[in-house]
Image (cartoon, rainbow, N blue to C red; front, side):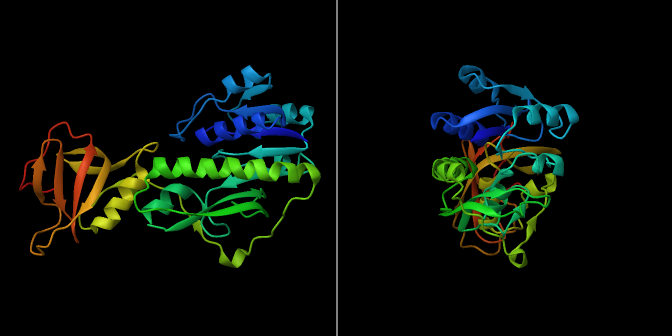
Length: 293
């Protein structure tokens, strides 16, 4: 089974390395030289060079010259893992077995953008790692393999990202032989159960202390590294917040946003419900107790 691989993020790199370890016949790789859209960008060229795999950097995967390059390689199947750009029909129908994509959500639920971030920000307790056959719609093709997982309270974006990669590479090891033998699953999604998450904006990352401490905790852990971080507007500037924890505040006559305590490089701020202790941040000058955020 000849595989053409498309990807450009850390997960793409781990998946490609797994395919190489499994001695899968990867006949070519398309990736990006850099990406302003992917905070978890990874360069795939070094792995290709060390394993003798043909590789091209692309800007538009659907451009004629890239389609031609892929056609000449004659792949049986295309794997597209970690690619934030649409594939047009010519590419989706180019290989006999189609294009296998990846979405870390419980499809048909939660299609669309930023699935890992939204899962944490919304406080979901469970999600899933899903490989599916790509169609022209967003994340709506038949499911190849899906594994449910828990999202513990203490997990942030980095820990969840690592957990998803560990699960996904195990799935790859399981379904590749099934694809080769043409004994794989192909389960149609129930589109009536589907919803689609929208693209985030900068405002979605703004901490408002009129939110509950739990909502702020979820926002910060969802946007922390490898992503852009949540932020507070303070003294006319955006200050990135990387890590917080919920703390108890029994007094209910204190307004949200008031700095209750400052201790070296950490501080406690009152929320609508409870309080938040800010542990990792980019304050150039620490606020003082009694100030308002």
